[in-house]
Length: 339
Image 1 (cartoon, rainbow, N blue to C red):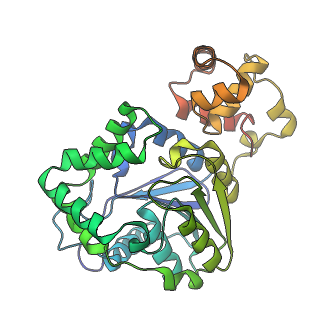
Image 2 (tube, rainbow, N blue to C red):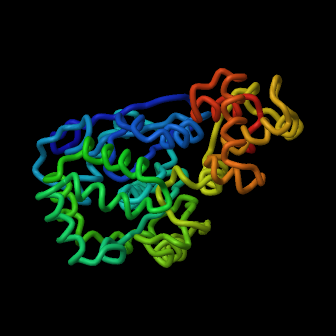
């Protein structure tokens, strides 16, 4: 429970260095609606203690709240981390979760070991014009289904319509239209830029050079203002952390991890075919574990989508995987995924 009496739901999974993952306003209990989320979280969670929570007014946390503000965001995080009680931890802040991560890292520099800021910003007005925010808040109140689908269809323009529908469904099930409007209004004036210089932890700023919502210049500016930050630009539209293999690899390599000896493997093991897999299947499994989509694998290996799909089906059958999350875990356990 927070210091102002709000009940906050959270979950802790795995063993290893603590990692707090904060993604916009989506509930951790609904990640199954978008399979690519499970794939990325399987990668980040292996060898780490993965911590997720639902902020007030969303998901499994207390829904009836007085309002939303940067200070209430901080109270939610402080309540969760008091309960989990890690001495030090790493934090990933994605999109609307980024300002919360910045706020906590600046207020609690002795507790944050590493910080990742992905496709985010420090000042709301830099990313969203006030008129647009006001219009969107009004639309969420009058037609939440249309509002959720419109913004996610635009933000995920490189993805298919089904993916956009899944993200929109997850958003609507995580927060009501009225609560989303109040969240927007409560953060419209948020400016955490003055806090960037107070962040002491090594920081990785990942940003797409083609981001259509949050300009690349905002990520570059944060990297310049945070004393120990490194900027990792990548090509292509943003569309969420779960769609960019290179970004996932960079983040995974940046964060501390503790794996059992059997899971570490070595370079020779990584380059050799896995038992029962052909060299080509091992190569494709390595790319799957790196977060590549079937389309990206197709282009990288000069194979047709159908051929890639057939290989992935064969791989899953051979290793007993039910999906990308299982395949990623298998690849890391057997030293196939690049560290």
